Length: 159
Image 1: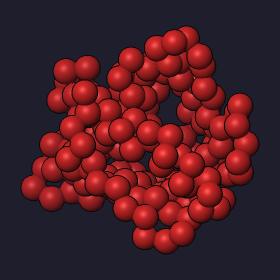
Image 2 (image 1 turned 90 degrees about the vertical axis):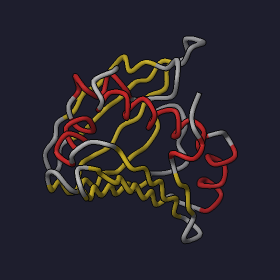
Image 3 (image 1 turned 45 degrees about the vertical axis):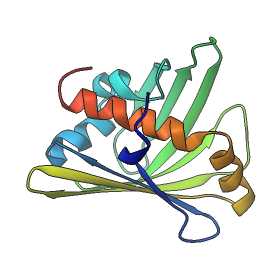
């Protein structure tokens, strides 16, 4: 079960959602966990979900495609294109869903390290306030908390 205190959620503008989480791991390790398929498969998605497709072409202009399988067997596809990659501190990419098309999002992930601990700040710019609010109301916050908890276990070598 996710610890709600582990992820901070903010809505600084009408179309943005900011997720912040601190991990007990150095920045290069967090960056690798966010970009390497063999690590992504170990943590991506809420509890009980699995990443059954994980294609990553990590270069500016390169694409990614993920397919996550929920516990009920339903599969959800996501895709996007990398716009900026600055290892180990910044990734900017587009994101959209395959079975639901509310428009494309822009996700900016920034990693900062202090004393061996890394803060991930992920800012998503949604196509509209309605889309952002719909995702918030759908339980996305608890799913993000569970996902980041799984990432923390992966970084600690426990997943």
